[in-house]
Image (cartoon, rainbow, N blue to C red):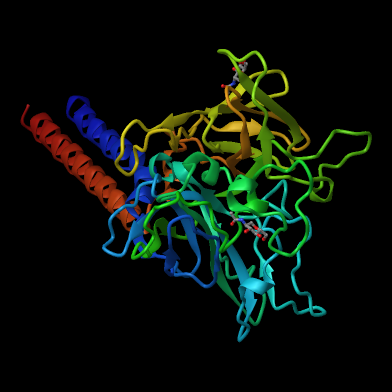
Length: 471
Ligand SMILES: *[C@@H]1O[C@H](CO)[C@@H](O)[C@H](O)[C@H]1NC(C)=O
Ligand SMILES: *[C@@H]1O[C@H](CO)[C@@H](O)[C@H](O)[C@H]1NC(C)=O
């Protein structure tokens, strides 16, 4: 009998180990994907578009986002190369809006959403809208959930494993409000301009800008950046370049990947760290976001020694306001960038994110542009509240650069999946992550196997019995 039961038991164990090991796959298989087009952007040679677009198309309901990819396309849906339309940045940000209230561009914070103050119109206890900000640290300036620039085509935004960014939890939505998304796209049409890299770096002289979007004088010494290439500004076009009939209509095409929220999905939060953050550790500093003023952009001065090895290294140590596990990381750099990294205080590396430059003409491989940044998918890195991490951003300083950025995106999970290797915990751990159906199926398989084993055992006993009777 023992000889025959062993194969049955082995079968049972196989049945147990095969089906549950697909717990993560269960989440992966549930991923939905949809492609959307933004409202149109009308561009001319040298023109700049930097609109805030409200209530954009997006999957609705309580969902977990697994990825957000974007690119600029023309009216026929063809990808547009960066040397024609430079994608300075796009950012996506959720908000709650009071039912019946229409949010518009003039409600938006000044300076392209990068201003110091938040001009949310607060009407007593019922504001017209509430922006849903990322987890930190510069929540008054860099508030978005997703955002990239020229590197968008070749940068992975995939949220790994059982993690996803939780969106529109109905328990958190205030009564009388709707959940929506806004999109800010900053595109620069560089067809026919005198200096493509100068226009993409928003050099004030090329835009002939001396006062900003709100009529304030640009501070002396400010050579270029967001203050000089706001919506509807114009970069200088070559004399004799025929701009007639060059008007084109473009769209940001974006692909959202998501899962419907359920208990098998583990929430991961977006945190954006900025190397230009003003924060300094002082006696009694709490790391609270009031202490952070993020400049968002900075200038890289050309090096003096006029040779190789001209690298501008910028570092910033910041105190983390969470307990959790980093499961994803990626940096945002502009042209000239040569890499960025996040370290622990003792120098241990957590994530380095390196740029890929194009070397051709076609969309996704444009020479001289950053067409991708490498993303990190580390074994979850545990971070304790109050721990200090260090950012490092390197730019080549062989030539100077204006308006460069040093943002580092991380995704932080509050909890890890329960361990799944140990056999006794097998059922427990997977009852949660498996769909009910798979779990039922597994139970049926186990029941059948047990039944067969019992029948075999009985029959054998009976045979033994007969044998004993006959002997
Ligand atoms: C630059 O702006 C000034 C003042 O607005 C204007 O007088 C001048 O013609 C502009 N120059 C160019 C090249 O557009
Ligand atoms: C930045 O440059 C410094 C100095 O050259 C180098 O030690 C460091 O490894 C670089 N960091 C990254 C992320 O490339």
